[in-house]
Length: 150
Image 1 (cartoon, rainbow, N blue to C red):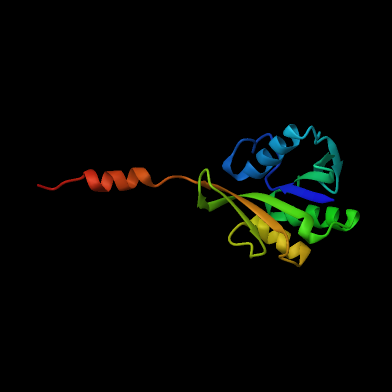
Image 2: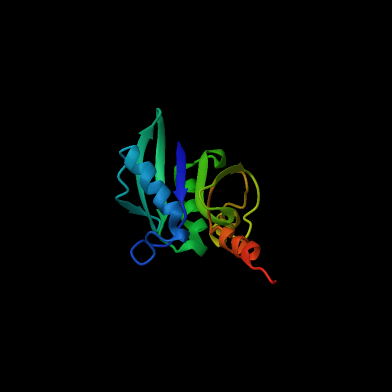
């Protein structure tokens, strides 16, 4: 069994923001795999399905970003999911927009949602999918090269 978690803040006011790219990603994953995210448990929205013959839980914690780890830990404990089968998807401002980084192990960096997950699980042995949301700095470089003093 796999637990795929998108980090974000409750949709509505926060929908379609850079900080909610984790929610957007699991929504798309669920749609493509015909999983309805329509259940509630442990202060989360979730859905279950089968993907490539594996049972999958798709989770969107509703605790706000800074407490996301509480929901992840509750699902991990209740369903007895091995940390190696947990995938956390989140935004990363240190990664260029449009870039995806996949890591196993590692720290939480500056991301408060990841800090919460690492703290609650008391473990760093799970997968992370970091989705870049950093805005390009290209315009500033362009201006620097176009300004002349004659």
